[in-house]
Image (cartoon, rainbow, N blue to C red):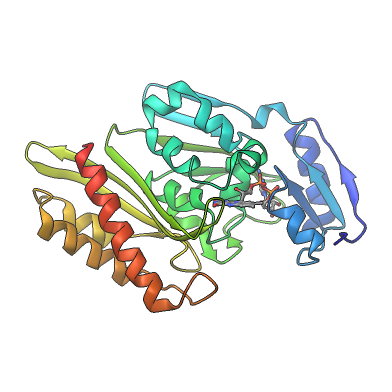
Length: 284
Ligand code: FAD
């Protein structure tokens, strides 16, 4: 299909993008890699009279690592995440998750900013960012603010970002924890039927910290405080993994669709969550 008519803008700095957003409000949308937005426009599920292409804004790209502090520009592609050796050392869960997104063609264009800003419950990065306790930098006419990934998602395609704001960077602190991103999908290139990110660190023979978050098991990504609490202080034995999995399952709210009915999704989720926790523990 062919999208409705739109005006095309290609600013070369953040100010230029904000100027168009401010002038046209919710009649304007930014485009990053375009791999979610363009299909929506072609299907006429998104009407965008003013389309702002972010590809010309160099300051939105790049990965900076300063000790444990990591900052990723919104226009960094999923391929860039996979290829960055420093990031693979500092926060290997990003590479592991990005490799499970779609296929190389999509990953060359799809950006981290587009993936987290979109608000699609099927996108893999939002749950991952909640697991990492990342913060999103938002820039608008009134200045800059940060919103925690765990507070950002309100409903499917609804986020804490105002229409006139641009998501510019993602920041988090790397902890060196054991990690795993487990994803069940129907075929290569598909979105998750269920996916789970886990970060676990040991303190002696006990678990000192644990963070567990899930993808496509509710209309928003789900970070489960209860799952982490069930692991902390335990040795990470089978009983603790089961308790954490049960706690995580109590926090999800999947809907039936072409990936299966609700009971099937809960069953798959249970397996994926246990696997993610066990694998993160084996690396802790
Ligand atoms: P765009 O499509 O350009 O934008 C998406 C939305 O975010 C738009 O509403 C746009 O206005 C907004 N936006 C983008 N950047 C910003 C910004 N900086 N500030 C504010 N708003 C912004 N994703 C997965 O996670 N897992 C998958 O398994 C997966 N499979 C896919 C399979 C196929 C065949 C395709 C085509 C896509 C798939 N995707 C998957 C989605 C892909 O990762 C997208 O690229 C991603 O979701 C959006 O990134 P984008 O850069 O293309 O954003």
